[in-house]
Each structure stands twice: as C-alpha cells, then as structure tokens.
Image 1 (cartoon, rainbow, N blue to C red):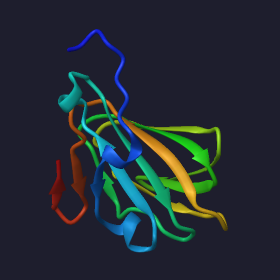
Image 2: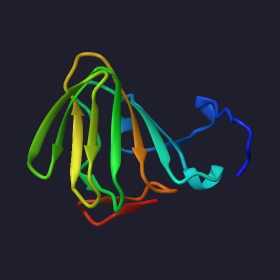
Image 3: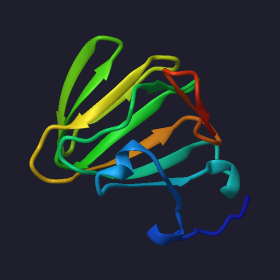
Amino acid sequence: MSNNARHVPHEELELLSGKVTNDGGELRQLSGSDHGLQTSIMHARVAPGSGPRRHGHPHAEIFVLDAGEGRFEVEGEFIDAIAGDVVIIPPDRLHSFVNTGAEPLRLTAIHENRRAVTLFEDGSRRD
C-alpha cells in the first residue's frame, strides 16, 4: 500500500447496473482490494420512489445519507433516515431501501470488506 494520498475521481469509480440505476439513478463502487484497503465504498444517486432489491452481505454495511431521505427495511424493521443520518446494517441481514423524498437520495455505503459482496434474496450474487 502506498504511503501517498490518492485521489479517485467520481467518473473513475466502477459503474454498476441494477435497480438503482434503472430509474435514472447511478451506483458507483470503489473496491478496497484495488487500493490496498480493508473497506469498500459505493456511492449512489437514487431517484424518488426507487431503491435496490432486497439483499444482504456477509459483512457490515454502513450508509451515510448525504442528501434526501429514505426508508430502510432490515428484516421487517423500518428505519426512516434523512440527510446527515447514518444507518448501520449488521452482516447477513436482508435489507433494502427506497427514496421516500421528492428529490434524488444521495448516499455513501461503506462495506467492511475488501470487496463488496452482495447476496440477493433470489439467490443471485454480485461481487
């Protein structure tokens, strides 16, 4: 790992496809393993009324809401969050969220793993 600070421009983050992006949103990822890091991040812009399908991770996920508002569902528990809030999802918990506001929801998801591993409820996987 380099001792120098690094800058990764937004457009250089890996662009992922899926439900979040189908409605005009965007999901980009930085895999920690590509940069000698133990964590990975995803940066999302989610259109009103949209959100990812239910999924889980074998590692914790920490959401930092940068703008907007959303409703998170974690195995039947609902959490309403707004810009500035942090939502922590423990490992192996099925969850999803939806943008409940009128403006785009912008959030950063921090994954406690060198690569974000996503296991969808239907058995499919992304890593």
